[in-house]
Length: 569
Image 1 (cartoon, rainbow, N blue to C red):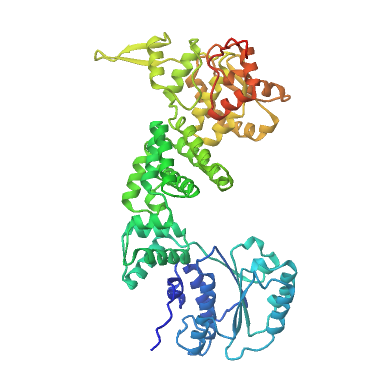
Image 2 (image 1 turned 30 degrees about the vertical axis):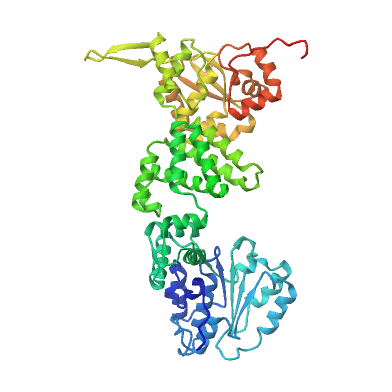
């Protein structure tokens, strides 16, 4: 007796009833109710990403309309009659599945228009399933319009597409639209576990989650990955096997990245990248995994992670612990930076260099400045101290040294023989107001990231009667409007009053022209640390090589030394 041909899991486990369709209950229930009530549409538009059940649902609908065991359309096709069997096998002459990508011309649609007039050979309905319908040409869509609007009573059209925005509105308006969703992690895990049990394959919950995560909500992708793993592993699938076969990055590597960023351990960051490359992993996938990991940390920081993340409880606990070590602003910045890197990462010629450069830069800004630290820096400015390092990072030893030497700090008896040091408010002057404004913007961003960004577009230009005057260029009109909102102005005034001695109010002006803004934003002091001669600094910055180094490494000019040239030079 001949052995039955092998069917891959995606075909073997294709749903044959509406009840078997996973994760699309909002669609299957609606269609079943319409069949029960006799309100059957003549055109359906199924929209959704690949591998989530559009074509499968179309076949089940075709069986429901043409099942022979029922006297009419039924919400529960038998699956045993000739029509149900031939539709499932794709051989029914009254159910035509057409590929819109290869049958997209006007002539192809005209052929459909001619054939649709013919009554079904052995079924109640003649059903046309057009997959990837968005690939039809404009003329083909126009040729289909009249037939789609008023088809014969025996004809039903089911259109499926992954790109709804490419389907003309005139087509959409003639169809009942159904939007398919990506399948949730819980539903996908349940389906995969059912398949594994039936196939008698052992798989850990951790490995099963990794498979579902890699499938990204696609049932067909999940079944294909599972098929590949069974071929590789045999009867037992382990967590390590999943990562090896799919080229995924172990979560422990992502934890190493987080820890190294927090510890500012550049050597460890570079070692992680080296390990990823040496193991043959795709750097693009690594960047995507890092982005997803920091996104998960952001969720852990701001919301109920167990409700929003389909992760094992032990993984969520680890992420919550890691998220506590980052500030909210830092996590937002990390997500933004890696999202920007991922956007064009595949097209970069030197991917490893781009990734390493970003990691090194981020390692310098992962520790946020607290309000107390900002006050300490402002006091140092008010006392005539050296300009502090670039914003967002503060060296703890440097702060302690200033506390010990700076008269702007006062000691108070704590009542137990110990002394406590508390910073006083700093005086804002013409010389330090730009730096003060940067720190104000940074502090405000802890309350509202958008406000912090908007404040960064403003430039302080004067101090008039305890009022700080800040100008916004015309190109930053939106930022100006955002800052001028009553609640935002109140917040900024509060920050200024809390940090400074002599600023009690804030006035927002529009720049009369671009030159004042440009002169402030481009002055050498933004790139200078200490007491470097401004003219010499400007000359140094004019050198494109110097400017490039400062831009790449976010540096400042600390000192300028000119070596004596030799006679051979």
